[in-house]
Length: 110
Image 1 (cartoon, helix red, strand yellow):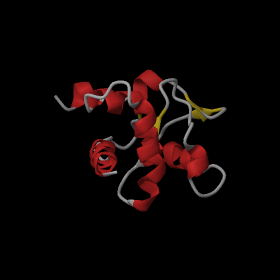
Image 2: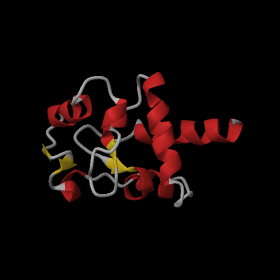
Image 3: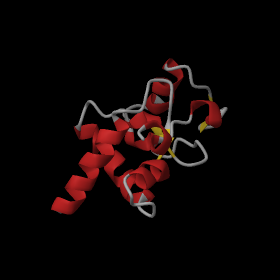
Image 4: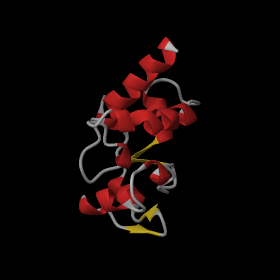
């Protein structure tokens, strides 16, 4: 389990760097961490991020901009409300203008 915990902490460290008003994907974080095939593992890390209050998990979505993790947030639309409060428009659980809001850690954290 120590390896998973270390990977999860690395995921959380990247997620903490996502600027307000921006989102990234599970796959983009995995790729940045050198584990391109581990998007699902990033998802598992995000599922556990509620134990860490300083991780903005609402800013991590799937590659199409769909709020796939929304059922892990308290309340019915908390993930959407948090994103909308940062100026992101969501229609039918999907971020609009994803390319405008997308933050790629590979480019941003060179």
